Length: 156
Image (cartoon, rainbow, N blue to C red; front, side, top):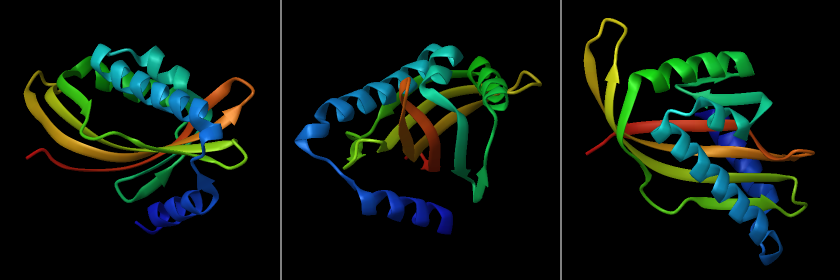
């Protein structure tokens, strides 16, 4: 929780949205849409193209730095076993870009419903709302997702 608050505070302190960043905001929204669609399509490659090689994740009370190979393996398994009936924004994401245009973040609240098939062949429902922060950095290749801070609650 402290890490999430610290990261969030640092991002909020140096980030503003201006009319000059409207193209960047649109691009970050587009990357978020690509991320959502990659889940629906089971498209690991589309998901991975958004991300930088170096990545930080804060989830479940833990900060980790999974490699691109680790992320690809985990996501391949996850998407192969998940069938989504819904994977959509509950509300419009909140997007900000730093004044110097090098950092951006997007806060999303996403409803996820479907089925997950376990290794033993049994199925369980997916019914959750995720809230997360996507952390972006402008690179020579354009905007890249460099981190994620997330939490969830049951879908009501």
